[in-house]
Length: 77
Image (tube, rainbow, N blue to C red; front, side, top):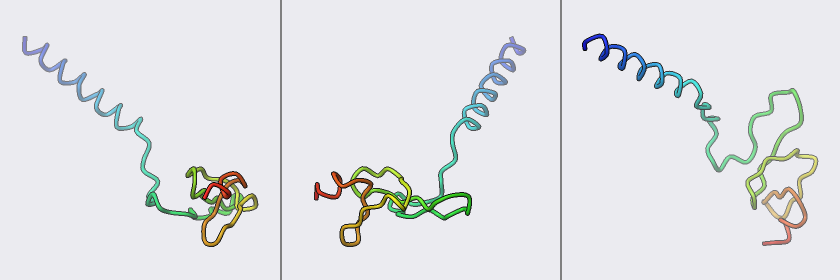
């Protein structure tokens, strides 16, 4: 009976550790971050104010201080 208890505890610990290792770490950026750090491996990515999708800065459409990924989102103010 004692062996069964230790086995069950070991299985629970393994599942907990496995779940923790599969969980992606948080990016460290607040949800309102508009421009993540550039890691010098590519183009700077910006966040669309409408759909919250990241896209290359070269494709940005600016309306005032807001940044959009496409003209359709920029026009839906």
